[in-house]
Picture 1 (cartoon, rainbow, N blue to C red):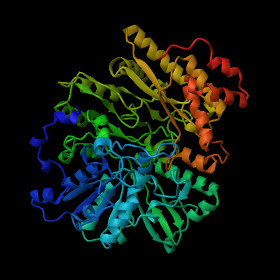
Picture 2 (picture 1 turned 45 degrees about the horizontal axis):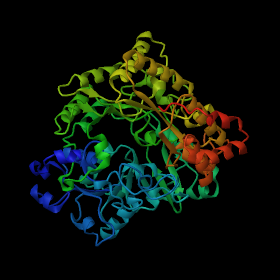
Picture 3 (picture 1 turned 135 degrees about the vertical axis):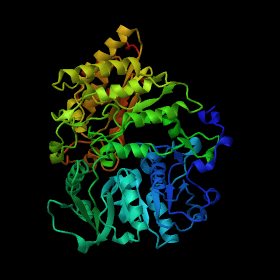
Picture 4 (picture 1 turned 90 degrees about the vertical axis):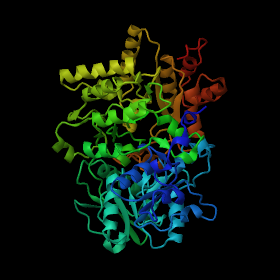
Amino acid sequence: MTSDSIIDYSKLRTDNWLPTSVKEMKARGWDYVDVVIFSGDAYVDHPAFGAAVIGRTLEAAGYRVAIVPQPNWQDDLRDFKKFGVPRLFFGISPGAMDSMVNHYTANRRRRSDDAYTPGGRHGARPDYPTIVYSRILRQLYPDTPIIAGGIEASLRRLSHYDYWEDRLRPSIIADAPVDMISYGMGEKTMLELAQRLSSGEKICNILDVPQTVVLRPLSELPQPDENNIILSSFEQCLADKRAQSLNFKHIEQQSNRLEGGATIWQPTGNKVVKANPMRPAMTQGEIDASFDLPYTRLPHPRYKGKNIPAYEMIRHSVNMHRGCFGGCAFCTISAHQGKFIASRSKESILREARQVTQMPDFKGYISDLGGPSANMYAMHGRDLDRCRLCLRPSCLHPSPCPNLNNDHRPLLDVYAAVDALPGVKKSFIGSGVRYDLSLHPSGNQEIDKANREYNRQLILNHVSGRLKVAPEHTSDAVLSIMRKPSFKLFYKFKEIFDSINTRAGLKQQLIPYFISSHPGCRPEDMAMLAAETKELNFHLEQVQDFTPTPMTLATEIYYSGIHPYTGKEIFTATTKDQKLRQREFFFWYDPAYRSDIIKTLRRIGRPDLIDKLFGKRPPHRR
């Protein structure tokens, strides 16, 4: 029985959701809508689902918004026609994941399920929904503005390597006939666009909105200066991978500016892609306003009786902030949400937590009280003037910034307040915890004391039996390319974890995440990872083969073989066999892989590790 079966949908009115059909629209007394949003995901009215966030934001400003979730693009296109022409624009929200990550594994095999679709069934959205949906809409409604947002458009806003097609692609705006891309978090952008279109401006004349991308005539390309960065053209990048690599450095640096970034231009064919600067991170009042919108926190009643796996994962969770200053080489968070943290007020978090406690299937346990990185809540630079000049992609690598305030006391205050709510038995931290952040000496005794208390409370009170952390590798050379701390810090955290559990009589597990085939990782690095984790008595579970995704440092290295910041060549496993040989080391304890691993160890000149891995006495399983 799914938790949805506990909800009596017969008692829920569909007008508590944004309309998804003409019938629902007319039930509100409407004869038109201002905006129609086409979503690649099922419609879940929850702040973790982009279409719902934008729809509710526009609704709160007085606009009439309809959502068409997972439209059928293969029939007579009735889903694209049912609301007719909106007064302002069509919006495309392709999904909470890039469609190709959603559809394919690291081996480029088609997945058999889709977590954002009722019943988990696959096939409810096309590859590249931004392109497919916009081409249909442009054919049907050639004169109506189309604005694309979400992860897919955001991370493909400039030339990018597409792993699944194994080729460099231009900005998605060159392939999708949209008028504009809204990249990053879109509430403020979409409100500004709605207001300007409503006042009579033409979409073709709206060229200066922050966090938007437009396609312009090549004649508008300016001379480079401090306010305009001219990237190598798409054609130059096709001819020279080093040009694409150097482009990425500029894109990442501008994405991580506190404020006042430059406009980025990239010639593409006989046009030029213009990417306006990112906005500053939301203020506390602004992010509170977004999360405090009247979400039902439930899937639309049209899905009665059907389980939506992605929703099940977050239905009893609360997100406390946006942004991440970790800058991990393989992660897209900062490219989309930015490096600087936008934190909700304690009061806003408590309001949502109270909503969770009122859900009919709530049993007293909040599954996650977290964020992109669970313990970055309310953190920022001590001197923001220094932050305004900073172009570092990470505040933690190669070492924590001396200007960073890593005080965990605001976080402890929120934890205590949520746990004190009636009906809450315990709140768990399911998001990734940066132990390098809580272990880093701040130079302030009170803060360091609070951070030690954070680790203690996290381990004692907020672990659901297993605490997942992400050291990602054991090799310092690989970790440096990943922008992750030394594995020595994992040992330190594990000592704390084990000590606290022993004193409390708990048998909780520490579950580390690792990645194989990351740029810079060689077979000998994986062999040493296997040997080192064996010594720690780990049988690894949370592992993955590196999957290149658009707009990450690691993907640029994978594609070009060059580190954008150093210009040095970096070895990367790129063939199917190379990647398989690395991944096998995760499962050294499985007899099925033993022969291949032994052959690899002999080939790389490390026969000394054969006895180390395959001794007669297997380790105790953890």
